[in-house]
Image (cartoon, rainbow over all chains, first blue to last red; front, side, top):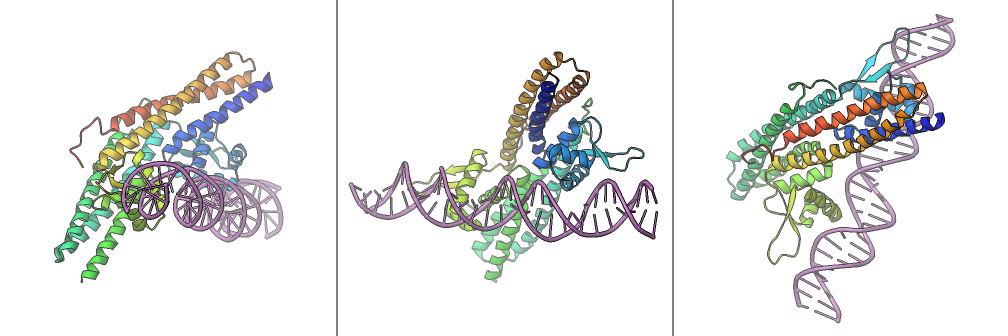
Length: 175
Length: 175
DNA sequence: AATTACGTACAGTTAAAACTGTACAGAGTT
DNA sequence: AACTCTGTACAGTTTTAACTGTACGTAATT
């Protein structure tokens, strides 16, 4: 019975990991990073690289790079234990806040970057258009220009929408 | 001069495609699909598979599968021209509305699916917990159970947040 | 009915991403 | 100072995704 319980739990653990990983992948995590995060999240107390490696059956190198990525996104934190040489990591609580804000940050900075790039190209094209005399080229250029205007607007709307989505603005009880 | 204009435009076209594709990739499009969409979007009038193939330097098969995906997501539409045998496709206008609603639909259905799966596993685990007597297993199971509750809540919040984001609810002038 | 034109299924190939093992730098221990 | 332990860079490998060419079903044309 004890053995069977153990199998059941182990099994459930695996299934949950698998399922929840799918959600986290939607936030832009790679399948590997997602599994790693869930492993940390379900584990009681922080883990060492070696533990992760063993838990997932992947190399320590993979864990090292994986955990670094999660760290950069603010999804995982390093934790200290006196007189313990190995690095320890744990998943941040507040799933919603952390994932959403990491996600939104990614969107905003990307959208803003692309918007700027396109705007600058827009300017370049505008200058050029004025010097045109070839009718057909002119028409082509104009068409492209109009599309670029739409793209810029598109990025602006994205930024607006995602700004509203940010849980730092709204308050959620906790997680 | 005409030649130079041509090069300039061609060049600008390429750069814009590249840049805007990056944004569309954030909506979950593959790089290939993103490029295909932008190509259609920038082209005046609808295109045939052969035209796309030539424009992107990829096989017609790729175009066929690519365009089908875009079609399924409601980002591209098929268009008719009397007495013309080839299929014609064009990018939908209203970038914002189309991308956002396709995106949100994807999120909502995924989040909902995962939530249901986890909830059902949660139920399974709950039944099981009551039959436990081993102290340590019990504690483990309980810890897992609590995490699963959090996951369910997480999915609920996601659904809520993305529902608000849907441009079908809000009105945007156009695009 | 025969022929041509078109789109897509499918198997095979090529390109990209994920992962591993070794090797090494730096910190800690003896 | 020599030695041990830990994390990571890097090159090479494996796994996965993207892409292609051929072959075929269907619809239009003759």
